[in-house]
Amino acid sequence: MNKAKVRRRVSRPPRFYLASLGCPKNTVDSGGMALLLQRSGYQPTDDPEQADVLVVNTCGFIALARDESLETLRALGVHVRPDQKLIAAGCWAQREPETLLELVPQLDAVIGTRSWNQLPVLIGALQQRSERLIYTETHPMVLPEAGGVPGYAISGASAFLKIADGCSRQCAFCAIPGIKGSYVSRSLEAIVDDARRLQEQGVLEINLIAQDTTYYGHDLGMEDGLALLLERLAAEVPAVPWLRILYTFPGYITPRLIEVMAAYPQVLPYVDLPLQHAHPDILRRMRRPADVDWVRRVVGELRQSLPDVCLRTTFIVGFPGETDAEFQALADFVEEMQFDHVGVFEYSHESGTPAAEFPDDVPADVKAARQDALMVAQQEISLARHRALVGQRLPVLLEGSEEGLTVGRSYRDAPEIDGLVLIPGKMSPNRLVTVEVVEAMVYDLVGKVVAD
Image (cartoon, rainbow, N blue to C red; front, side):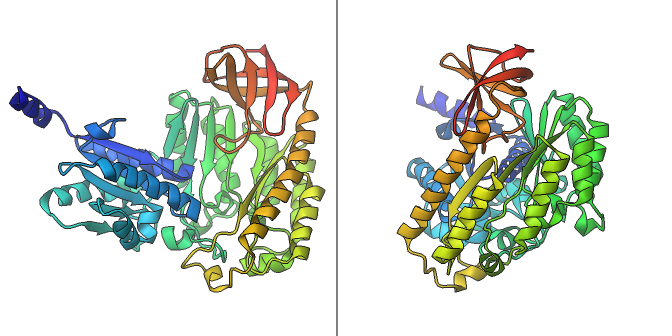
């Protein structure tokens, strides 16, 4: 009986288990790795015990993300068998491969962001050798085309479509340029081809992603490349009703981009504009655009041209040297600008970044207090802006039902980061309906369907 079980185990196709952590860009890369493994004869499984190869696509952006990656790897490592291979992929693997191998003794290999398309080759090498392997190249980012895989990831009726990767900026606090290398745009045709495939699959929302979407095409010699891309997408995928832009940069919200957003109903009036701070001295130390009045003008232009625009931003508190006065300037700016969505993060000292040379002189309790104060202030703003929507009708993308509620998102809410629209009753997902807002909460809305 035992021998028969062994024969059946050996004769079945090999299987892989893949855990994807971090941002949507990682999710897209994970999809590419999964497809490459399937082309190599591996079948996916959701059960680590049934897998021959275990892959964790790690995030290494900040300490909290590394903690999650480490916890996932160690949980798998505790139960890994001699006949299984455990591999760490992604950002942390690229950034600190030796550290990962030291922290997780069960790891067989690491493969970085610039080599993910070599995953089948790495697994083949592991089967021929006993030593632990490191695949972390220093060449520019590998785009999906290099692996012959799509540059998107689908969840329900929504998709993330990668238009570029890497980053050429040198923000003092950010490790991404060191992890991913210089900015590399995908070709216009490659992106449009992917969008057509998404349209054929019935996707209703395409979220354009990159480290900075507004920089798209600059490395290809294009001017206003994102605006041009949006015009092409509007023409080529008319059956996709929602096109959303994520991860924009303050300096590249151009008049042409605003004009295109206003001209095409498919392009959602939603702008994700990470600002990081509002005091010029802090912004200069961060190596970020320091003209706060310029930001005010851009926000004013967006609100004038797109009356229903939803603005999301993020801020860092506790950056080295941040004084009480500089933090108060940030708090005053948040009150003045009345953003719809705000994320606030405590500064994380990251090795290898320019800011790592600065003294981390803001105490942890002060950072936490400033984060709390800013979030409390923003909660009042968010609630007021949501209350202004009561009685209005919004298109909502239904995503699922649970415990007598249907959950969806309006155009004002990006997947995985913003709020939800809650609708009493159970309705089938993956379709757009018109909802009348009947109740407002800090982060979410409650509504009733008035048109299907």
